[in-house]
Length: 548
Image 1: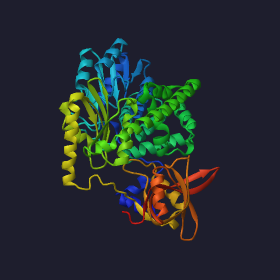
Image 2: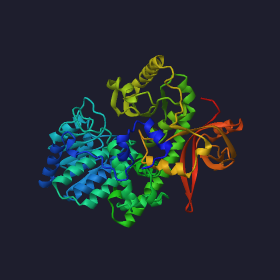
Image 3: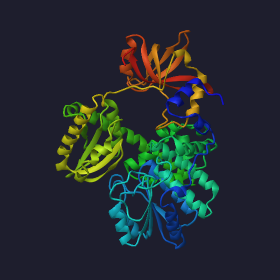
């Protein structure tokens, strides 16, 4: 196998040794682990099969994000191939919130539910699982989130469980659900085409939940994308891809991240996440079309609400920055379902951890996003006793808290950030990193095609970023009557022009271009138009020469 020199440079910098190259680049990777290596998998499978054999009413209890939606659809398909006595329940983001709830368990009981399988939630639901058991409802928790002291009662399948020896801890919730399905398929006859179809769900959920694109996840996503490229077995997913102006034959991980996942997510953000499940479960063409239309419209509305909330939050930043470097903005008149996205956008702008809070009576709900080097979960976990509810991980969190405790929390978090800055003065400095340095003359179609060997890209295997020093820019033109996006050309030493585009902060970039030659941090990709393939530069940052 001949590998482009720049690709070798990148994979070496990412710690991918020679012994891993064949598996890393293989179109048909083999790296996968026995599902029974997961702690409690045998007990979990036995309890599920006993529930099926006893004719119990089984309820899949999911989360309202893409990971939870795909997990729910996956187990509905697989368990549904073994029994008709299975349904699902997804709590409302707005009315119930994340995880298991006593009220939800009461509804499930009223509807005759006898055995609950959680997906993408439940590990820390000690009181709720105990309550279900007190009602005679069995539980099987499948999850991938960090464990807490409030460990659920009963059987838990979670690679992050203390003592679990599963070799890979980076599975998404849908990855854990898939492992349960694989284990069940060893014990009972599950149609192989069905297992191939649900692998497409695992691919979408794993990418959407920003799981590491390494190890077993790389195998899962490569195989799932190959299934999609060959025609896409799931009718609902295929229709959503087509309606998103994407080509299923060449679909990439980034297409799912930016084109498919937000639409599936939109229903859960604005109201009823079951719409996404219905899309993935339906075989009726009319219902599929209607689900797609509703998801696309929900996503449009989500964008509108998000933009409004962002403008509100952005107007508060200067005042909050005067209080410290842990930013908490209060946005009360915006849709709760978009506030996490807003927190992420504000974080990107100021390179600080940001929490957006909204008040409802005497209670605040908060959702936060952090930056590299600041573990948000660790920071807030110190104050766990103040929260009514709390959860998350290093990069994101969610909580509810009494309003009277909010000001004190803000003061303590800002104090903690000040102490962190005393230890690491550059903690909040924005840095620009690259995988390799290029000259404009190095950029061609051969390099762009070689870079596709690194796909699927995502967390821990990011799309490569290149630095072009001392670049000459010509033909600058802003797009869509605003100053956020622009097209331009890079000029090589030989005088050739290379198409380039920037999708954010174009006005600031233009100021640098006006000063003369620039340094450009960029991605390289292939742009196809009417079957003509050309190399294109996607600029991430444009800075005056030597600014860093």
